[in-house]
Length: 130
Image 1 (tube, one colour):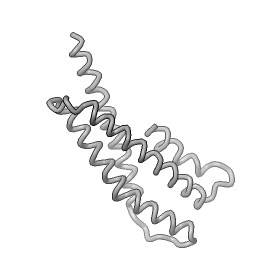
Image 2 (cartoon, one colour):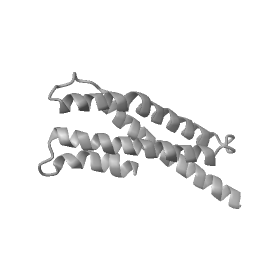
Image 3 (cartoon, helix red, strand yellow):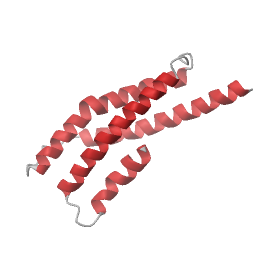
């Protein structure tokens, strides 16, 4: 989901015919708010599934990083980016900011963290089987 939406759908929608900046931003706002809700649900599931594996440091650290990233995106970046979209849609030009670049950097970090978490869980399962 993360790869498909953040790194594929988001930039490609602006290449579609007749998609204006305002329309593309409006679509992006809806898509990323929905993605954020799904990520919260999935992360809750990850936390609950690993609640008894706190001794596994890579897994615990990965989960803490994911919680931090999602918290920053949910409570800090998405509201700011949403406000900027509203300004664009009302014909105003918001002041330049780095919030979008920070969001992208956190998406990359989230992807890498999910990779580490997934590989750590696979390793853990393989060790348990032996």
